[in-house]
Length: 242
Length: 216
Image 1: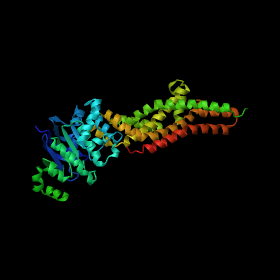
Image 2: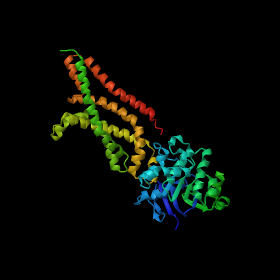
Image 3: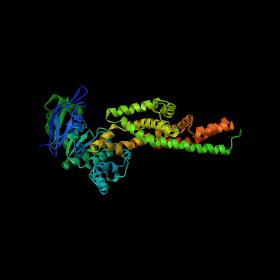
Image 4: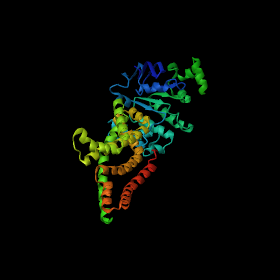
């Protein structure tokens, strides 16, 4: 059984069809990259996977559990599925340590004495252990995004979703974030990413999913998709981002 | 007839005590109620939003004097109960404070980005935990300067209570002025006392504004 099973998912915003029958499986440990033009439904699909959006039709299962906004254990479910956003969304009134330990403490995952060691551990994994006492505003965009990733890691998620996490960064800061994500990929984390970083998609992803008009238009390993796109839509998309 | 003496000054100052009592009562009851209205305004339950919005609209739309009259003169007429001045005044100022603080705090809550709620939700926090630990504290920072600003309005607003005979600073001024026939001097002293009370608050509000300029 796949870790994530998406079956014929439909989603409308007002009268616009954003998702138009999406089906997709993601296996445990797999790195899947979703690419496509803006408005193709990539981010919406990602937000449906952790029930930030409710699907109109179709079903999403994660670890065999059906996902929807009114699921009884939504909070426990979200602790297992981490999501990192384009805008970092750090808690600006809390220092880095507290940003990371707030949720593990409030949800009872850890006790008080374990908080700082946990923060140090996950910060070390994103290369920012020395920033544990910093305020978010004192960090660069790339550092803030790495703290946001560390904040997710502190919940020990089984699946991580990344929604264009490098799009808001200055070009010279993109690399440090991608490196952290590459390391996570090597450690076996199951990851679904929406990204415009084609180099990352090509080198790190196990599978590329090209979305177009709210559908999975084409999918396959990067070696195939980037070299021999089958549809003219993907061919023109690849040509446009090169 | 006698002239304005130090004793009169002391009696004005001691009447300030009741102004302070009024402010404390209004805040003590009005702030929690205001918090309720503010959170009601951003509730996911539509009826709660409507009720809170309506309450704020109505109270803000009625002159404070109207509220005072309603609870002091109106209650005996409508409900047949004689309300002591202190009670009537407390109820009126509580509602007044709740409506204005509720609106200020609603603004503060709405100024915190929706994504902050979402970030908390994605970490498995309950709506209450998101409010208590993430959005509330940030909204408080944003709301603190206008809240202190409102406090100044409230201090001065308590002078209206004199109209229904409640003896606070302004009413004490009337009494002294009647005894001394020196209204200009008396009211100048009253005004100076109000000013001296409000100035520190105003300065505090300014410094908060400078310190909590929304960043962080």
